[in-house]
Length: 394
Image 1 (cartoon, one colour):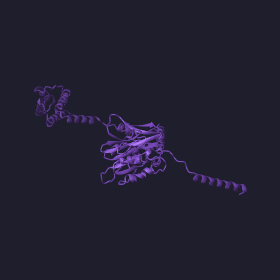
Image 2 (cartoon, one colour; image 1 turned 90 degrees about the horizontal axis):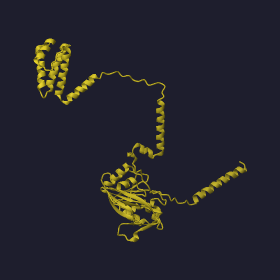
Image 3 (spheres, rainbow, N blue to C red; image 1 turned 60 degrees about the vertical axis):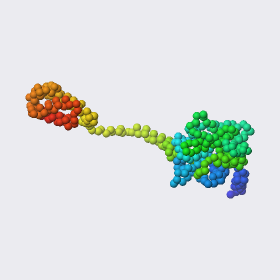
Image 4 (cartoon, rainbow, N blue to C red; image 1 turned 90 degrees about the vertical axis):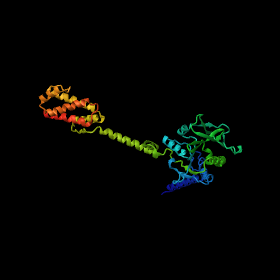
């Protein structure tokens, strides 16, 4: 290397070292974005709140879970109830996931659901409205609970540009109790559903790291947690999907994953192209010619079974007699509708059929015509006599 090359290399190394020193020596600016994660130490993380739950629930240390509501139990061998803590910025509930949430609470469990944007499906079901209000009073929000054992000095104030609150309609399908307020507007509700309770809080800001340390919201958070029942506590992870993808339709699961959705659309496109190209085959498909079947006997058998199931032997008798009259008229030109002795003698003489058998046939015809009810045996006997007469002709 010449002298200029060494100079260039040394300069690049020095610049890299300066960048590293500046990168790690200068403190990073705080990330003020909403995180609401129990492992986040950012200003709007929930690390301090989650760690304080150990002291707030000393008899029931909280456990983290990513299970669905229907799978949560304090003890798999018992029917004890549990409390679920769910704190996030926004949650989208499908009809199925909302149904599971309501069923979970109605069985005697409790859910603390804290969010500035609670899903509209759940709010519509409970007949609750959630609204936001700009804060113009020196940007300070006063929080206090309904418990009159606390003095006005126990209220907490913190700064924020706006705050969220609840209000309900005059017609309520559920039993509500207002537990807390923000600037005289309700921000903490207790709703009884079946044997359990759903606690709704409209603002997770007081539970974040910054306000617990600098905003002095610790007393308020302690009082809010004191409203929850003393039972096993589960912390629902932020990554948990309330929609419970295992129970959703295939399209809903695919739509939640962008890469999976792209693969699915690509598969549909390839399948469509393949289907279209199949229409342009060079050789036409040769159809399979099936042998023609004689369906006449099938039709006759079906009609016969229909008459048999109707148990109307009188109607069947009329059709047998009509068919026999038609046969005699066609071959012997004799009208035997009256079935009298004269027509019997003429038919016996012209056909040459045995006189005793002819008398038995006409006697059975005359007898059955007079009967209001006909048994299967009587009908079968007449049919046999007529068939014997027809066979001597053929």
